[in-house]
Image 1 (cartoon, rainbow, N blue to C red):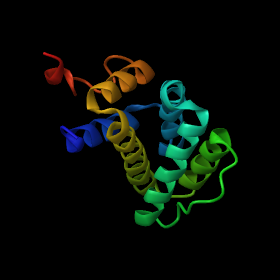
Image 2 (tube, rainbow, N blue to C red):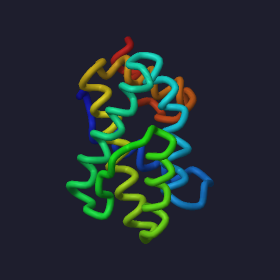
Image 3 (cartoon, one colour):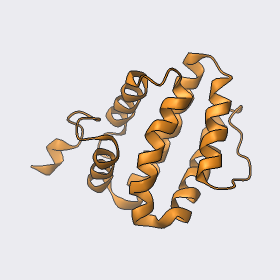
Image 4 (tube, helix red, strand yellow):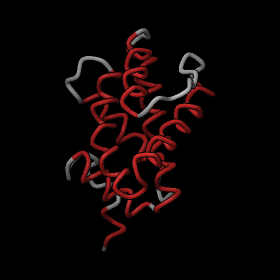
Amino acid sequence: MENPGARRQQIKDLLSSLPAGEPGSALVTLLRPLRLQVASLVSEDGFNFLLERTVFLTGQSFQWINAEPAAGAERELDTLRAKLATRTHEDALAASTFLLSSFVDLVASLIGDSLTDGILRAAWGGDALGTLGEDKQT
């Protein structure tokens, strides 16, 4: 990773800025368009695997997000939103940031930073992550 700390901070800022009302809804709001972009490269099953792996890894730091057998991405996203809704805003934001950052890091480890930044911009809009990654394109 070129600068995973900067990407993690940008993701936290993005989650915090969404008007969804709670971090769980914000997380799902960001994962849905990301799902379309990632699945176009690795298939829907590939996306589901990456999401399951990320939920498992997140559960290591946030035990209340324990991995359960997945029945598809939509159900997994609904389960995540419900679990996050039971936590304080701070806990939910921390777990959402960890989960989304871990997912993005996992994708980047497979396809590279430059392509990952392009996927994030396609999923979330060109300005979503500010100038992150732009210096690599010169």
